[in-house]
Amino acid sequence: MNVHTIPCRKVSLMEDSDQNIHLKNLSVHAANNEEEALNLLFLGDTNRMIAEVWQASKLNNIYR
Image 1 (cartoon, rainbow, N blue to C red):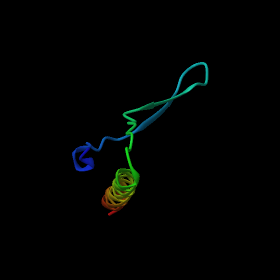
Image 2: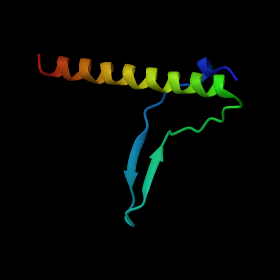
Image 3: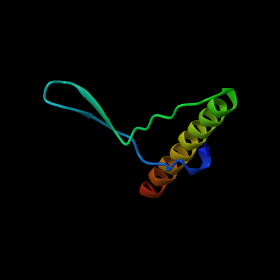
């Protein structure tokens, strides 16, 4: 498994009329060993940081 090929998509949280929570664009990846698990954790953390920086930059441009 090459974790660098996993695409980054925005995860959307939705609630239906019965108050069930649905996550759109969420992905699940199985790790076959410790190295793959750590790579996936690193990739997820990196994606989260990139999203936070992008969101802060977007908000900064709105308030200029």
